[in-house]
Image (cartoon, rainbow, N blue to C red; front, top):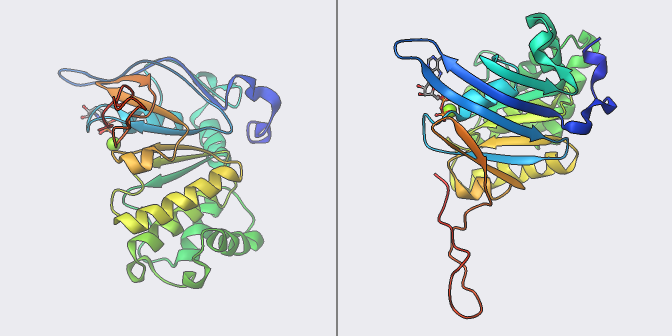
Amino acid sequence: MIGGLRGAAASKNGLVVLSAVERTYQGIPPVHALRSANLSIGREDYVSLSGRSGSGKSTLLNLIGLLDKPTAGSIMFNGIDTSVITDRQASVLRSKNIGFVFQSFNLLPNRTASENIALALLYQKVPKSSRMILAQRALDRVGVLDRAGAFPGQLSGGEKQRVAIARAVAGQPALLLCDEPTGNLDTSTTRNVLDLLDSLHEEGIAVVIVTHDFEVAERARRHFVMTDGVISEQPLMTRHEPQDHDGSNSCAQGRPQ
Ligand code: ADP
Ligand code: MG
């Protein structure tokens, strides 16, 4: 049973391992959104992914999150070769292991904060008796339990993103995938949300975060840059060009896009 493999020792080569993964969108002309990507994400990783708009970041995140399939190459998730499993099995694997957070929050407007989370748990086949308890626990974990009965329209941007993060982690995923999660937030709210992601990472969730923002990327421990569908791991570029002792700035490298 695929879901039962969560946490298995099968991960010695990484939680998610991409080998020569390509994603081409059909059309005239076709779009080669991802070219020969090799990438391994471990259980304790905290990864940033930067790059210009249209460079393929969301394409990669959707593949890592098993929302989409490569047109070439393979993706191993928790030791399972996802190219040989059915869509239904992929969906089980995803719902048991992966949480998603998006820039636009994607909360259902006519459901309260706790109902939004409980509904996500329903899709994860959590028994009804546990859903509300887990939803309240998740809201407590992200610091907005007092807003449990509020509808998204009654929440601030930061509160909405906390609820969305609570929804993403309520089922205790191994991996949290965040696509520009602070894109709609002001600077101080961004910092609060990043502090929350830091603490979730410290509690044992692997985090992948797509961002244009240096302050966001610098929270991560590994940094990838996407350029026209090609991914490369790079040291994080420094924002303030640090001075060496002799006054030179030999390690300054600019900033990510
Ligand atoms: P990013 O997230 O870095 O902005 P995307 O992964 O969304 O980039 O897109 C990468 C490229 O693939 C872009 O050229 C985009 O127009 C194209 N693309 C993305 N999704 C589709 C799709 N469903 N069909 C066709 N082309 C797509
Ligand atoms: Mg994108």
